Length: 459
Image 1 (spheres, rainbow, N blue to C red):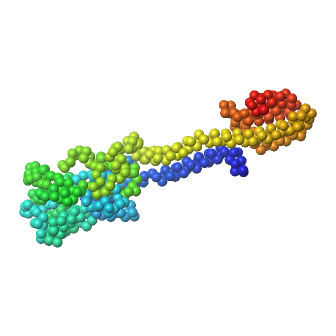
Image 2: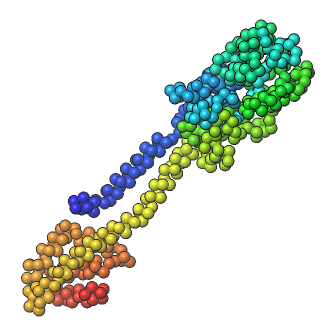
Image 3: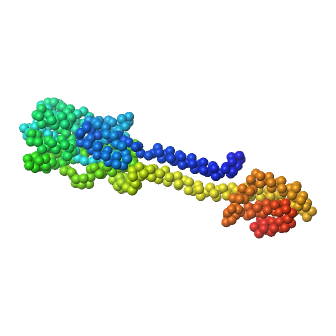
C-alpha cells in the first residue's frame, strides 16, 4: 500500500527516472555495439604486392575515419596464423586461394575474391621449354616459409612426383630470388603475384629469363577448383622485343579478403566499398567490374558480404559519413524493438491509471452512500445544519481530503469531461453539498444533489 501511495504521489518523478534509466541503458548498449576505431590487416612482405594493396586499403579507410594498421608478414600462410591468434589483433587479411579449406577455420569468413594472381615460373633463358621433369637437380626458389607461393609449389611438386627430386628448394624472398635469377645463381624462381606487380614486370621484359608455359593448365584447374586458367598474350611484356615470344598459358589462384567472423558488419561494409574502389577496374586477365566477386572459394561469404553483393552499399553509408551512418544504424536496431514495446504501453498506461482512479472513486462513493442513508441525513427530524457540520461530515470529508483519496482522483477525472464517470460526478456533488452545508445552504444543496443524481441514474 505504501508503495502504491508513493507511486501515486510521485508518478511524474518516477516516470522521468525510469525514462532516464532506459535512455542511459540504451546509450551504454549503443556505445558497446559501435564499430572499433582501428583494426589490423595482415598483408605480406614489405614492398610486395599484398603490402602495396594493403596501403591502398589504408588510404581508403582513413578517408572514412577508420584507422587501418598494416601487419607485415611472409604471406598467406602467416596471415591465416595471425587471424587464428586472437591476441594478434588481426581481424582482416589478404589470402591466396587454395591455402585454407572450409573446415579448417570455422571462425573465418570471406568478403569475396579480389583479383587473379597467376603462378609465374621464370627460368634462365637457356632452359627453353621448361617442363616439370626439367626441374630435377635444379636450384629452385619457391618462396619463404609462410608464403602462399611456397604452399602451392610444394603441392604441385608433390602432385608431379618431384618433391624429392629437385636439386635444391630455396626459401628466398621475391626480390632476392629475382636478383639471383638474373645473376644466373639459381635456375628457376616461382612467384604468385598479380600481373602489374613490379617484380613480374621486371622479369617478363628481360631477355635473360623466360616464362614457363603450362600446356596442361586445364588438368590443374580440374584437380584444384581454386585455380583458373589465364593466358599471357604474346608481346605484352615488351612489344619492341616481342616478349614473351608466344602466348603463355598459366593457372592462377584468386586472392580473397578474409575476416574473422566477429568483425563488425559496418567495418566489413567499409572494406567491401574500398574493394570496389580498388579492384573493380579492368586488368589483363579480366574486364572491368569482374572484381570484387561474390565467390566463397575457400571460405563461406559473410552475411554482410552477401547483403552487399545483393543490394549494394548500405543506404545510410551512401548518404551519411561512415561514423554517423554507423550511429544511426545502431540507433535503428535498438529503437525499433524499444518503440514496439513502449508504444502499446504508453497507450495502455493512461487508461489503466484512469481505471484505478475510478475504481477508487466508486469505492469511496459506496462509503458516501452509507453516510447519506444514515438516519441523521434522511430523517425529517435530522439535526440542524450546524449539528450536521459539527458531528458528521466535516470530520469525514476533512480526513478524506487530507489523505488525498478523493481530491486527487477527482482532479484527474474531472479534467477529462469526455471521459467523466457518473460516480466521479456524484462524488463531487456530494463534496459540493457538504461545502454548502458548512455555509448554511443545506436544503438547497441537498435538493440539487438528489436531482442531479437522479439525472445520472445513481439514485
